[in-house]
Amino acid sequence: MLLSLLVIIPFFSGIFSFLSVKLKKCIPRYISIIGIFLTLLVTIKIWFSGNFCISQVNHYPHWNYQCILHWMPRFGIDFHLAIDSFSIIMLFLTFFLGIISILCAWNEIKENEGFFYFNLMLVLTGVIGVFIAVDLFLFFFFWEIILVPMYFLIALWGNNKHNKTSAIHAANKFFIYSQISGLIMLISILLLVFSYYQNTHILTFNYDLLLFNILDPRTEYIIMLGFFVSFLIKMPIIPFHGWLSDFHAQSSYCGSIDIIGALFKIAPYALFRYNMTLFPNVIQQISPIAMFLGLFSIFYGALLAFSQTNIKRLIAYASISHMGLILIAIYSDNKVAFHGLVIQIISNSLSTAALCILSGQIYKYFKTQNILKMGGLWSNIYWIPAFSLFFALANAGVPGTGNFIGEFLILFGIFQTYPIVSIIATISIIFSSIYSLYMIQRIYYGPSRRDNVILSPNIKEFLISIILIFSLVFLGLMPQKILNFSQDTISSIYHFKKKFVNSISK
Image 1 (tube, helix red, strand yellow):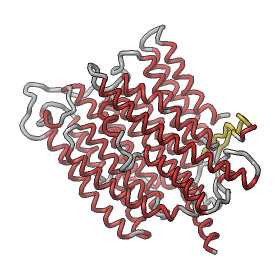
Image 2: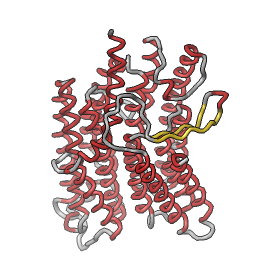
Image 3: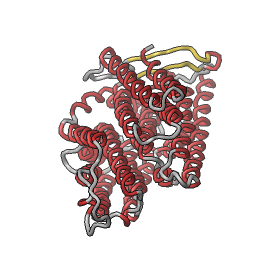
């Protein structure tokens, strides 16, 4: 039952936040932060009781903790939650970013506070559910439940409080893309379930059973392609990236932390968890396409990031570039790259979330996201320029940060299986350095456009930035802690896929 609390607590925290606003305006924020801390405590309890330790697991799936309740047994649908080392890492990342998101919104959100925290907690509920759902119908349910609250977060609390049209337009675009993604996924899930029913006469959405479904190659390829496209839309990878830049530019920086930090990571997680294991026989056929899309996204995202004059759009396109590298890692068929994938997901989430927070601080002071109207801010603001420089360099993968370890492991691993791809991807590091430093140069250096203005971040943003810096440095200096923790799941997925491929080839 502990696992069910992971979705029950944030869900009801959101409802109580919504209802409590009538008592006092500040109560919703306290309920939300208490709710997320309680959920974190439950996860820590599961962590200590689930025997998460370094071990060589020879079979997959290997769940450390499970919760199975019948939901709609006639249709083979269960409330089946399970957790392993990969899931729990993603949960800790979600809680960490969720807490930061609430703290950033603490004094910023002053309209409809109850509804804001209701939507925020509902997004977190959906993200947590995606990471622990094992029944595919339940997974789809959590995947879709994120859409509506995310729509309201961007439409009602966007950056531009005077002109809502652009925010609503961005929210509509996000909703349409997400609906298409969900529709493709639903069709793919139903095809998979009905094919299993044809083979066994058992109607089930249970991931553990569907893993061993035997499909003819053509059907397997079609279903795998459906999952693949659906997840790429949410990552987003070019050419499915059209919703991101508008959505990111229009969202408040409190919401951006959730979008970039947590929401973006459900797609790589799902791609690795489901496409690698449900369709091991045909996954190699899509690898060249995935590699091409990944490389194209790396360079195209970097090029667009370099040409942006809006700081939020620049961060958005930089994220697309990094997502390209993550996509390549997923399809690298290499265990070292898989380990790098975990480090890169965490590090990229932290550094990008930090840049969103700092860009929000700049917007709060100067009411603009236009880089061309900034310039020379180094002498106008205390601390923020130095923090921005650190996170920009971390985003570019400088040694000593988790981003460097993640990129190194991914590129090193890919070199063993796809050396040409690795060499081309390595060149992307130069591009990320160029747009990162160019952003810093245009915002903070040069003649000051804001004379006689001296500002400093408040203590809350200052402490959040310090914590994020320590987190990235910790990942950079002691990545083995995370690698040890995720080793059993990553290795078991790798060997599970290899075992199937070898059995087919024989």
